[in-house]
Length: 230
Length: 406
Ligand SMILES: Nc1ncnc2c1ncn2[C@@H]1O[C@H](COP(=O)(O)OP(=O)(O)OP(=O)(O)O)[C@@H](O)[C@H]1O
Ligand SMILES: [Mg+2]
Image (cartoon, rainbow over all chains, first blue to last red; front, side, top):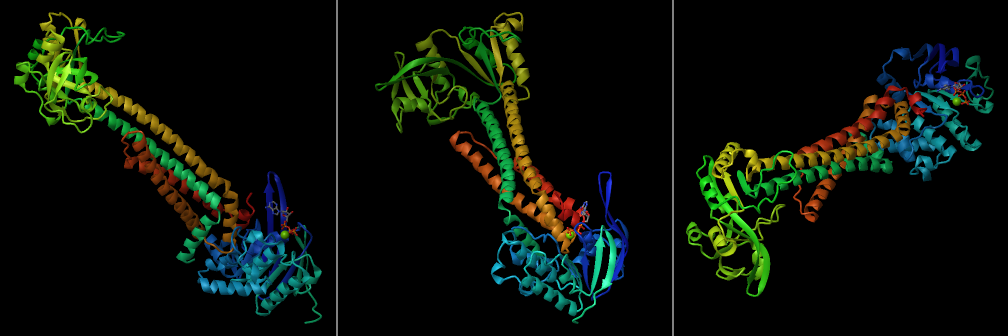
């Protein structure tokens, strides 16, 4: 369960203070599938980073599974990211000059998983993310944007995370691969994972159970989607 | 994280950026190799100068005719050419306390002929004490005896180079005759080679009894120098004083400033030479220090130009759950790997360079452990500090700030 209470995030550059998130409060229950929407620069990614324990809020409290994140040490936070969270970055953040397989298996290295098991799971998640096997040995900086995105998705799924946070995971994909990725998310959702995706596309948001709308750092709408075909 | 995986990450980290790794190592190699080579040249030169000073004898005082070189005076006039020292002076010095042996000598260049070949070389008239005093050894045959000196025998002992010039290679000159000016001398011995020292070449000389030289070649009983061996180093200054007083008295000279002779003390020479070599070593050490600095700046540059990329890499690793300790361990491992490998190559290159100087410049270089340790220590410290720098910085940032680092 993710509980955000009066979360504010300010950035200071010189004397100027910009608020990326203003007093946001909401709760996401275990197993929910949530879409976050909003115009560019509205603070979606910033919010997602806070939820993923990658960034700390300026004000407010964030409880993850009952624990106050602000009270956790850096190594406890690292353990949470390692064990519970799978994060797809908007700009992928792959390790340059490293192969696709090495990029995807890297989270498992820090989990102490054995090599054969790492490779087996990497192939599984790469299939689920829709990347063709012929690219597995390519260096990450030799891939197209869509291919990189799928590597980033596979890397986020490889540790079987309870919480999947995906920042525009289908932004660079054609509709066919996009659908494949969303099918994967939906399957994981059915297995009981909590899934939060940021998107600009209403059709993508429609596949989630709930949509949070954000504008200028403020949550302006938070509603359940009426699912016609479920 | 398993240990094998840490090693693999280190290995891949080094390998996946070959240019960065190569240039970092180059910095270490240059720094270490130049320090080792420079220091070995400095040490070698010092040793060689010390050896050549030792080769002229030990605890040596040398009395030479001519005016004392007063402090501040420009040049002593006509030293060696003035005839103020005699055989009797040498005999008198023998009785001074602290004197172990005395070898007067009178030397001049002559034209020498033997079986048609001829050469021009230094002929030294002296006494058997010369061997001990001037640290000369006989290789083949014998040196002349005191009896032969007393009887003005026409015998000669040749230096190995002179033998080569007159008789050719592998010839046995013992029993042959050489003509010095118009006098015939029988060769009775050859001295052992001393190698070309920086001073007069003792291998290209002919030794004859002092009395014979004075009787047949130069005339008179003047000597061109008197070599005195003191009993030990500690009393050399006292002995020098005693000899000065004795000679002043014998020459009826009231004050040391007016002396018609001068005495050179070997330890003066040693200290003069070692101050020269110390300066040389200091010079080389500063050159080496600058190379070390340049190498260090190279390492620093490499590490810092990649700090942005590395900070992002650290941000990513933290984002996917790496512990701070695991990141520090990886970066420390990479830095150790690069500096140890570079350091080893640097030691080998430096050692090779000093060996090359040994062979091509006929200078015996010695690689000292302290210079190896110093160079290795400094380069490795720089490598480690700047290798760890991005890890230290980035591990304090939160993952997002590290990923965004410009
Ligand atoms: N490190 C930073 N320093 C200063 N301002 C920042 C920083 N990161 C984000 N911002 C600001 O915070 C606001 C929200 O940024 P954010 O990246 O969360 O937007 P977004 O909703 O994800 O936009 P997009 O849809 O384009 O990805 C923006 O106005 C941005 O300029
Ligand atoms: Mg964004």
